[in-house]
Structures are given as C-alpha cells and as structure tokens.
Image (cartoon, rainbow, N blue to C red; front, side, top):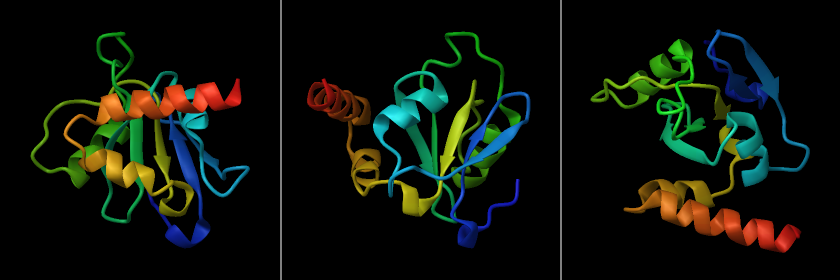
Length: 127
C-alpha cells in the first residue's frame, strides 16, 4: 500500500484487501469514529515510519475475524520484532487527523485503561 502524506488521507483497510480513503469531517477523527471503523473499542497498534497511526479491534483474533494481510504487513514493517497477525478491519490514520492524546496513550504502561477512561468521558459528554 502506497502512503502519500500530502494527500491528507486516512484509510479503512478491510481483511479482504479493500481500502477506502477517508478524511475527517472535523480536523481530527473522534474516538467514536475510530470505534465505528474497526467495529470495537480501538487499540492503537503502532505508528508507521511516515507517522500514520494504525488502529485495530484488540479482540479481533478471539472474535475469529479474518486475518488482515495488508495491516499485518504495515505493522511488521513498523514494529520489526512482532510476528503476530492483525485480524479484522483496521484504520490507518493520517498524522494530521489524530489528536496528540493518542501519542500519549501509546506510551502509557496500561493504554487500554486510559482509552476506556477517555471513551467513557466522551460518551458522558455526548449523552
């Protein structure tokens, strides 16, 4: 998959190999939009060398979702010591479309706890 930063596009990548380009309605994608894209609470897997953020459904394997070969290749290129597979749809977000918060979450020792806290706060604010 060719990534081109000047295009300012983010991508939904489905396991069957289809990719759909996206641009957020606002400046950045919300956690709800990321959740809708991956079909579950999103997990930030890695940052690519170009600065894109790769999000997946953390429970994709246990849900028996199909292997996503393109996402697995992107992940293995970004994090060379990993051999696991990525399952289900993923969202590859352009660096300009992601709030700085995600960079902080990626570095925290328990990122899922922080992500759930953010998601709960967002749901409370919207309700």
